Length: 341
Image (cartoon, rainbow, N blue to C red):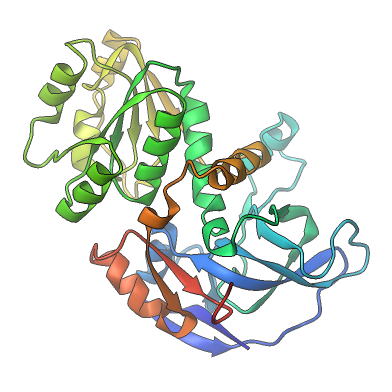
């Protein structure tokens, strides 16, 4: 058995793993596919060295089937298709007691704070397993977690039918947010600097603009007939995007910060005050977001074939990370099982 592990100093290695029997209350998963995301890039680039313990088998966007059951696990059978909602909360902190377990003050994110899905057999608490419909293929199902992120972000925005939404950043999460927002009845404009990504986004039927070559503030003014956007999603993580962020929404418009910003950013709080803007954070997801994401994928709302630009074997995980870092891919899946169905 093998896995892909971050071993420190921005190095990734294929490592042997043991198929340890699941403990009480655990499931063992035969991992089929694992998607690579921006957080995984941060891990491999060493940006999260202060948080992670090495060697770390990472990965949290996944699909697979149950391969073994620990004692005390009911309602599951070997062969059941599943994914995971990779959050473990303590249930005792103020956030949990207020019903916000997904942003527990002592949250463990599985695949970052503990071993993840880039291994052929993976033991997880049964409590974080999410059942998949039998008619959703496992390749598509590997997108449930990032789609759940987008569903949560759009829920947080309280976007309404007929709204105009601007998405700053046209990577996988930006495209998923745009797709979920459009499905909810919004008109969507995506701002993305990379030409290849803009071409893919336009092919999906979205209006798209290059913020490096266009005055994005003027463009949004034109696009909204001088009113401003109802909702702006900041997905790029770029300082330049944040500098223009508060100039884009309408009076009492909403800004949703989705991207992880590794450093403090300057933001025009005068504009927040002057237009009575709402500035919201959106982190991870709730279980209901996973349920909605699964349904959207099952219904074909999410353009999974257009988003998945590559599938690689486990031993090519490092090369896939390089391609994503260089912008040569949109969403890459690792075929962990080798010839997964």
